[in-house]
Length: 315
Image (tube, rainbow, N blue to C red):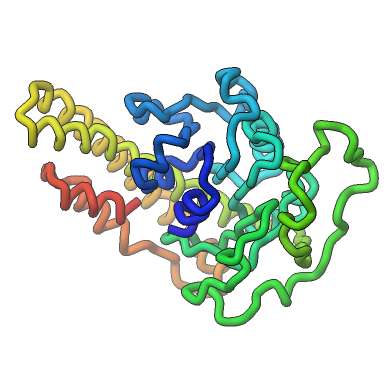
């Protein structure tokens, strides 16, 4: 993926905050240089796992303070209140001159500039099952991120945004709390200044934000199957005892994900018309055929590498 490529190109140590799927997609050699910070303790058997609760943004091991050359952040929510906490975590983790890459909606561009000194990249990621487009925000220059993603954009989307103020007048750049993450980076390493969008939060945006939150919860639930599944497969292939216990953990995680699929389906049944109206003005309820496929997949009792790969695709 683009995120994996950026981490590998930059090299050095990397903190992947609320991004376990990226962490487990890294080559093994690169992963040894990384930590994954996440609330889900399903990953705690991995040596790179660090428990993280964004409501306690600095409750982290002291040895992680200022120790990462690259910080990647993809929060589960898009609100300012949440991003303020993640910004504190980013300052805690980042070494002097660290590269920072964050993802959120385009409408948050002015906020990302204010809180973390980040600018939107031209490249926008393709994230399956999201009903609105995410943008990438960085404090460094990348040829890869300067180009449009042809799978998403044929025209330069940034030309349609209107500029916003670079920084609120009451902020103090000399205050460490106001200092952009990685502020020590040289001017040459900073990205080109882009026009920053400024949009009013609307009921439609809030509704789509809630849908995104629901989809994120489902994604996390499916990802949570992977660690016990891989353990069960390894133990089974090597004839090691404990396969049944690992398989039981897989079943428990699978059941939890199935319940989340059902909850999402119920939410869509209640809000499908509103979602359609917010997206394209359609009078037909918005639905996700993929949910039926995911439900069938989760109902399977198969335990194989192929099943694992299909789970990853569903996530």
